[in-house]
Image (cartoon, rainbow, N blue to C red):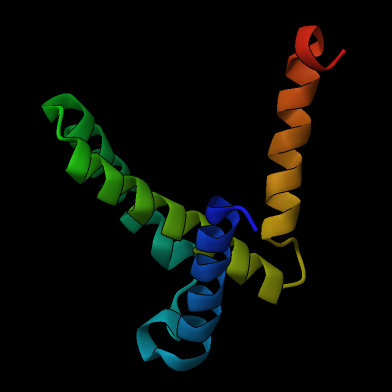
Length: 102
């Protein structure tokens, strides 16, 4: 398996475990995470503006965690899951690039 896929699967597994076992993670909702996501986004922008690639790597990870977290909560509500999110963005990219995917 591609190392990138392995790393992503590891994140999904950890998210599943945290959602089941961690009291803080269990009580989070879409709403409680939303302000934290804004904070993480500002931290990402700060890292970019400072040119700090090590910090940028961490902040991208923090945002990715939030996106996986939102998808996990939505899957618990039977709304959608991470697969749906990834397929939706892939479909959007293919649609926006007919010159590539014609």
